[in-house]
Every structure is written in structure tokens, then in C-alpha cells.
Image (cartoon, rainbow, N blue to C red):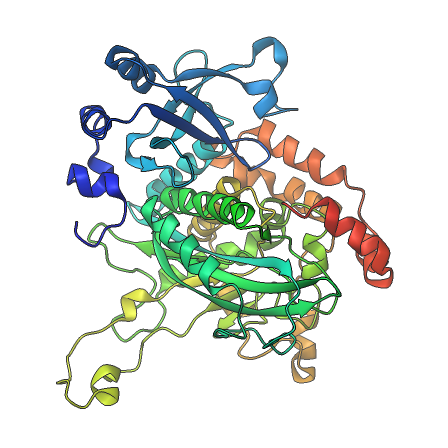
Length: 499
């Protein structure tokens, strides 16, 4: 436990999955904590909060055991009616963390929604993801779906002239040319202390200046974990970046696009399928992709266009998804290919010990790292409802196991190089394109909804709500208008700035 940063995990001496109510109460009493926060995701994808002051142990036990009542019609407008909207939120002990921003020591929990009968709320985003993970296990004979996200974001600060970075050349830049390293490193420390599984963080490509401000793009990448935990990691990450930025006098945005011609921000999702022994099922011992991997890719290819309904949920999303950029527009996949919708990153398949080559004093080890291989879905952005997006991707991967022609579909949609190069024009003509607007995305979701609703994963009310929400933008011609009119673009970006 000595390298775990979450103080609750260190003090209790167990992995979070093993926390009990007695463990939590003992920690609260030992640390003399009197404040408790509940956190839960609303229909808009934002974290919500309920605050408690604990004045006696009987009340603490009651709060932890029974949860509390909340108004579902306000949390899920358009889905739940005011006349029958009371819900419960009940804390998940495994999610416990100390709030890093409160003056009073405060323990926080992610919560599950429960209905009037004390059962999980079927339309709650976390419950939809839970059912998606369960259905994946059932269809694949016990395999587990893991995921992790890449949070790309811009930090906006007063303009500095000294040591200005080169425009659109911020990738992995260091201080003094990168100005927001302290902010980034504080953020990943806080996320880890709250139980998030951090892989690394770095500067991203995007950086530019206006007359008043510097815009600097960064990225935080997480480690692959079971898909339900991955959703909590991403929710934690977004909240901490927003909150820390506000407290440091910085403006943080996950907006998919800010200005035409400058890098947009995505939220790529890496996936992994793991067997009961914890082995990565995407690769053979030599690092080549398995049929399991090809089936998962085929499922993503099959549902790619409708997945935008969960991962690209406002009109600015489709200002990022334009041809001839690193953001994908064509439904295809490839190795190490950033123009593809689904990318198989470089995967440690070379049969050499790189450490001993770089460090001659080290003896070569016969150790393989091919198990780190992931498969990356590159369309989503920060507008996504994280739970619904991960449920959709999990469903798509599961659907690949249900398709009789999955391996053939994977073969047909594979591209070896940049799909936009002229020599691939013939193949490009036979590949599907992602939707270019929220309206088009809603149409694709309508077409595919039976797959998402199969096995009871997505409830019809949620799909209806997503379709209605996307169509409400009436944005069929917004992309062309925004690219041609900078004033209109700014108005559009400002409207969805804090997506």
C-alpha cells in the first residue's frame, strides 16, 4: 500500500473493492471527520453533489446504509416526470476518497441511483454501463471489458510574451515554453489521491494566442481498468481539472473545437479484453492480434456512426470531426494510424529487451510486455456522457461477437496508411463516413437502437431522450456556417464551452 496515494486505502490497508461499511466508519472516527459528500452523475453527464454534516455515529450509519432521497425529475429532465420522481442515492464504499478542495476534512463517495422499490434505477447512466459490462461477460463466456480514457483539454491564461511556444507545436513541450506544467502535475496528483488510475500526462499539440490569452492544450491519460471503474476515473479527472483551474485562476475547457485551424480536443478511449486470469485477449504471445481483437474491432466498425450519439453530443463536436485532420471521419481501422477511427497503437511486440540495449549494465530479461496492447476508439470528445459512451463502446465490442461475418468486416475496413492519401481513393469510396451533425448522429442511433437495447442494456427512454436531444440542435448546416463565419463560430463555442 506504500505507493498508493489515496489516504483512505493506505489507512484501511485493503484494496477499495474490499471496503466495508465498518471500515469506512472506523476511518471517519479515527480521522475525526464530520463532513460527507455524495457524488452522482446526472442526465447531462455532470457530477452532482449532496453535502452532510455528521453529528453522531447513529446518523453516520444511517446515511451510509440508507443513502438519501433526491429529485429525479431535476436530475433527469425529460426522462422522469415530477409526479413520480423521488429516487435514492446510495454510496459505493469502494469509491471513497477525501475531497481535496474542502477546508473541512470531507470524505466523498460515488453513489448508485435506486428507485422507489429499492432497486437499481434502470435509466441511470451508471446502471446502463453496469448492464453493458454484464452483457459483455455473458456473451463472451466470462471475458471482462476494460477501458481507459485520454482527457484532452485547453488551459486558458493571460497572455505571456516570453518563451512563447511555436503555434500548434506543443506536443510534449517542456517549461519554460509550456506554461501549465505545474497545473497539470497538481491535477494528476489530486486525481491519484482520489483513487484515479493515472498513466501519465503531457502537453498536447494545440497552443495558440489571442491578443489577451494563451491557449495551451494538455492531456491526461489513465490506465486500463474494468470499464465501470474507468467511468469514475474520467468523471474524477474532469471535475478535478475544472475545480483546480477555477481555484488557480485558470480557465479549463474540454470543448471539441475552439478555433478553425487549431487542434481540437478529443477524449479517445482505449479498450482491452481480459480473461479470468487477467490475460490480455487482444494479442497472441508474439504480439499479433487475436480473433477476439478482430471481433471487437468489427463491432466498433458496425456501430461507429451511432456511437457518436453518446460520444459527440453537441454541434461543436462536428467541427472537430472534419476530413484531413487527425480526428477521424471515415469508419476504418489500422495499426499506428492516427487518421483511422480505431487505432491499434504500437504494442511492444519486438522480441528484444530495449532496457538492456539502452542501459548496457542491465542483463537482458526474457520478459514480454505485449499484454499492454490496447485498441483505441478515437471519435469521442469531452461532450460525452461518460457512462453512456462507455456503455455504447462495450455494447459495440460485444456486438462484434454476435456478428457472423465479424472477421470479414474487420478485414474489409482495415487500412494500412493514411486513408486520405490519393492512392486510397477507391477504398475510401467504399467505406462509411461518420455523421457530420447531431441530427445525422441521431438518425444513426435510431437505426441501430435495437442493438443497444438488446439484452436490456440501454432502456428505450434513454435512447428516446438522446435522439430528441440531438435533433433539438437542428444543426444540419452548422458546420459549413461555422467554418465560414468566425463570429458565429465563437458564439457556438462559447455556448458549449464547459461541455
